[in-house]
Length: 304
Ligand SMILES: [Zn+2]
Ligand SMILES: [Zn+2]
Image 1 (cartoon, rainbow, N blue to C red):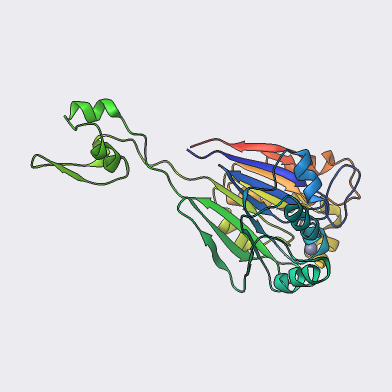
Image 2: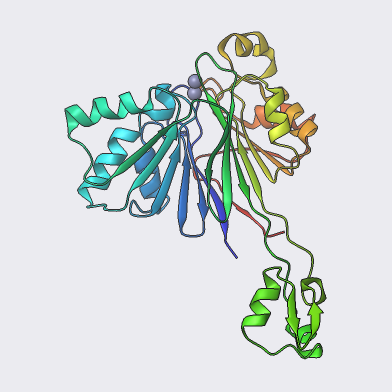
């Protein structure tokens, strides 16, 4: 049973402020680390949050704006200094490879393999045994991606007492039934449903990156456990938001409501709002289960 913890490392839009670092958040999925965006100063935020540099790690970059990628050179350098050997996987839009090559050429390349994957079309970016990550096009001033993390459903709970009652010997057969196999024992067929509960749905996290309100994102977010949506502005600046390819707190709340997500967390807050409470209040008029992310906010997604 894998623990899912989300830590917000940087929650400011465009530039850091005394309270907020540049964009970055991580999903801790068991021992694995999935980072979404890596704004300037992300490595220091990781140190403060006690997240080590030696983990199995994948980074997903939403787009090539400085407030989302300037943390990469520093973080890769620190990883090299600390002797990282494990490969690091980085996914992102066109331009990612050129950017990493440019700073590696002038600063010296990392001492560990960096495996780069430029995303050219929407779809599944990564699939493991336990989850998949999907990208859809965001609506921003340049190519940008929004990401969805989807944990696969897990087998239902296994009831040993039921297996004992059915005279199924403990051991391999129990495991096979738990994983959904129909087994045959002394000429009788035993179906997994006899000894286990219903399949438990996986957990879902959506990250908008920088984007104007996007119908496709509503689809992707349907029933999500957590929607991390940018809310750069208050709705009084809706025209400015549209022009720059951003979303207001009010619009983000509408998206959360339409998608019927369980929790909405607003991030990428403009430095013009040192008191972010006003964003929450605006969103709350539309959607009750909303938080404004602060740096180092940590959430745990309970098992379903
Ligand atoms: Zn941004
Ligand atoms: Zn941007």
